[in-house]
Length: 313
Image 1 (spheres, rainbow, N blue to C red):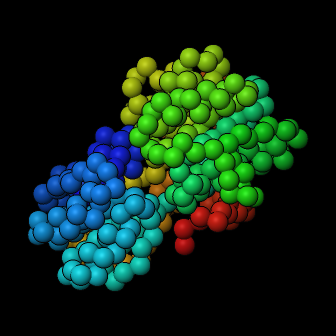
Image 2 (image 1 turned 120 degrees about the horizontal axis):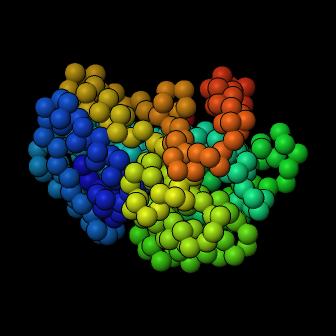
């Protein structure tokens, strides 16, 4: 596996992807190795290095590695590649993507339902499809809550119509996340969804210092992956089940059934969902929980359509 610049312990998709590869190693009896990128100049050389190791399956993580993955896959047709969070076309490339808008729709509905100020917020690390997909779903979920309950909960940080909003410009600088989140809190936001990798921890730091403010994490369950001090403010997380997807694809490769059709994680196949409410369960009424269950089933059934310019196909 080749990481992007976030590193193995990014509490985001690098970490989840590596956990999946480690699980595949244990379950399937293979040797798993990781090459960690520390900056943009590492990306292409690291994918080339992965090929040089002789590994027959190479997993790359993040849109930044798309170009290098495509180039090495074209040059090495006998090697099978998979890439997380980006769609790349090639006969020996498997894209692993997630329709996170579906789960973020639930998170937005939840945020609107628990907000006391009537203001919630989201921000991203960069304006790119895997990020804005979360934000689109979140905004639509809030809008659905307003429609059902005749409320006027507003969302700071993202305009779905114009596809513009608040971004820190990177996924590593925790202080940028804290400053941006504090600005949103100062404007009244009491539930915040950061879609920014490690930068999101800065939002957690801002939220822990602001009474009544809670956080929605992304990719994995922030209640488990963030420092324990933040557990009291984690409302839920928008989950991508990257681990199971990686195990499944490696298993298919070993069985000789690898193909290049994208794996798309959805609510229906368990690839995405929201996490338990943990310490904040008492803030979510039984009625709201029941509504979320009904909406999940409606999305799966196609009764509610969750669409975004960034929806994977």
